[in-house]
Image (cartoon, rainbow, N blue to C red; front, side, top):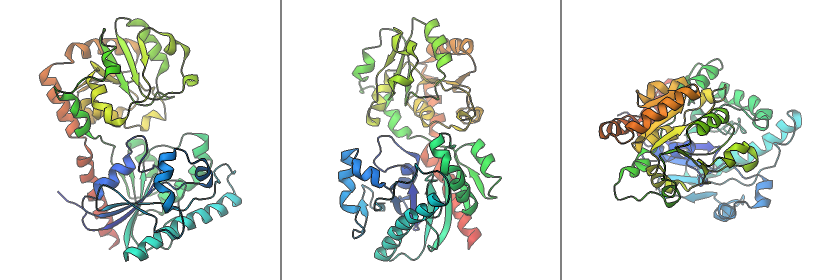
Length: 405
């Protein structure tokens, strides 16, 4: 296997390294750190974040590294992976797009740039690969730095008004200025290909080694899920949010009263339709720590992803799809992203309406514990792990370096 080795890589991330959920950004950093020296630049705190100190555990972990006099570096459990903490930045995202915003943005980018230069001096680094991992807020951080390669990793479309206010302009700058762009969906790939000739499609993957713990006969079903097993159980693990096809969910949960439907994840009560809080066979458990994923999945007879089909979902490549398969689960999915079909190789039932979903739930329940099908699901999941995706990413980075040499 072709592997990028013994390079220095700085990754400016949108996500925190210690966020509540597993992130693509940090997972890739950890994988690259197996063979390279990786500096993961934590999404910078703003002054507003600094004052709120929320969550307090994360703030306490960083507080000694905020100072401009600090080296800004936190160690991790991997010897070649360091976290870089920047000084707090100006809170400016509330401002309208324009000259004032862009002037203040340059100040913020200067703080990040100086922190990187400080690390370069202290660690005696003379060149490095720079990856902006979907932190579209800061397009010009790497200006005038000694780069071997400049990469933008585009993970999602910009949807909310808050992100689009400044993000559309900043992300376009990032795409055009980068030596190469890696996108997680075909739709994003097609969009960014109009702005940069070196754009690549590498979908997300899953930590199947974790979800496959559900196959351990000795693992107990999570008590919160075991309490619901008086009926066959169709389960979802993740955020309950606007992406859900609530209309189809209303139809199918009303139709199949002999099945329990569990939604294991965080939600805002005011954002949910009233029927979801009132139906006897619908259960909202709240968030589980990611460490408890295997015991939760073990209690599902069938796992599903009931997202609505729209322009937003068309770009989504959900990690949980392969986590479900890695746990050996019969898996259902609404047909929100046709690109998923080629990666699931017939091991997922896709539904476009409630009638198809009803029939597919019946098939999935019938096949849920077939040993040969469980084996086939796990095999499909094994082809969609981060180890497999990193083969593509390593090749892309090496090709980019060769092109610039």
